[in-house]
Image (cartoon, rainbow, N blue to C red; front, side):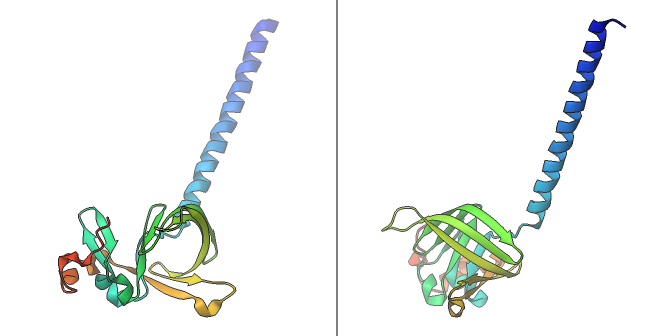
Length: 172
């Protein structure tokens, strides 16, 4: 074998080894990502302080679900969809999310009608897939429990019982 053909063979072996290593690293990264996402808590949905009041707090609309105008009279709530959180007075975009055991830590950029986007950090303890507790580590007496509303418990009929169709806040 000539020196030139040996260097070609050596070069191809090095390329194949490099490619094999990249493939293994790529598959490992994909497995790690899937293992984290498979175990990640699904925070999406409509959350209220009293699950029996879901139909008083939320209303279905053509393009999703929103809070009723009188939602605060029934304990209030918030809606999470993807990286967005919306409540009666603020809208947020989740920028960071970290789970530690049964606690989900979030950092979100939030705005109200008065204040522009500002970062807010908050944590929720995951009780089960449909119940969470907003935790205030320094003030545990202020913790607030929330339950996820099932979409079937929020319908246009139950919303109409609250009053005129104008009870919804016009969002969403």
